[in-house]
Image 1 (cartoon, rainbow, N blue to C red):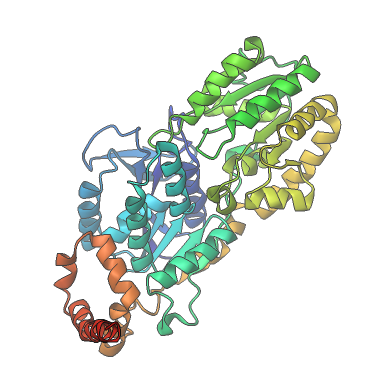
Image 2 (image 1 turned 90 degrees about the vertical axis):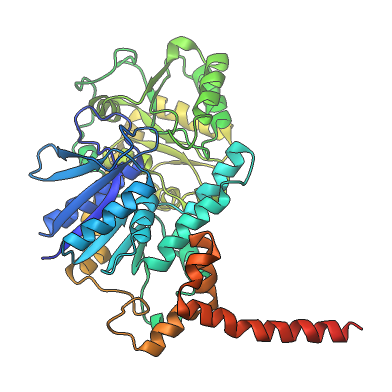
Length: 479
């Protein structure tokens, strides 16, 4: 078996007292647990979600997963200036057979550490689409270069990639072409593997029914409950959600709405506040419970006893390329689901007829679905049982990770990154491709460090006379 350095996102859901756990945190265990079960040795470091840091150094807190004989290290900062040198030192001191970056930012940190061992980068969500949503939220594009710099660094260094959807995999190949990675050396190399979100094990163990420990006192156990679980991110259509709840509550006087989660720290603290204001103005206060980021026990109890779980997206680029952990885990828990179209998982639900589907923005259709779920609970539960069976089959961690686990069994570098296998001429060609040179400039942020590389400098010099000749010819023709 192989030894891997793995950098992921924390806190992990099994940590004592953890409440703010994002989909990135679930993704870390999605990859790590099957690696351990396959017998691999894993040195895991977790990087905190922005807004949850407990320090500004690379000091480690050693933590152990509940029920697992596995200890890992939780970094107390996400500052790349401190983490990247620490990763380099770790790779110099310890022999690893490969390294894995789980989620975009951990993969970026590993890329900046320039590993000389096989490197798998899990790009869990398309960074550029999320950068676009960030620009729409804050009203400017000043951070856009930051998102591309992160993406480009990983494109240049990683040997294999995983994406959260097949659609994102298509976008990734376009980016790899721009970075000069689709070259002659990689003609037969498979760069990307789609890894849809898996059902997290805690959800698969939920037993449907009321009366579970952790059920919140603010939520009546004897009424139909509509459940929102997780963050209110930028692509959440809170206007549609409020209108649908208002209409459904008018039709179903006993209908109740409960939400766990809230603002997405470090990314979007506005969308949830807009929903809170809309709910306060338009929904009956005694029929709404906004529980915030709460204990895992409470989240699981609500998945066990709620009537229907919902997911509401607006029309945007991220929705098309992204995924929704909440839908996968709701189905894995046996909770009936209703969602807007747009994501790949929503298309799967619609194709397999495993949940309620509406168009983005259609609050009237959503209200009808919610009222129907409250009125015809047996019908929705029957469909949810079928959805659970399919979700536990299709989205089991080991099933989604088949190609990744095969790579772990025999980690390999990409043909254009395998220094030992390349001839000097091939190395010069791979490093000197125009797209690769200019992508490097973008990642470094300035020309100076790049021009110290003789290969890159030679390629730039070689192009200058030709460009000068074209400019002179154009000038002469214009006279």
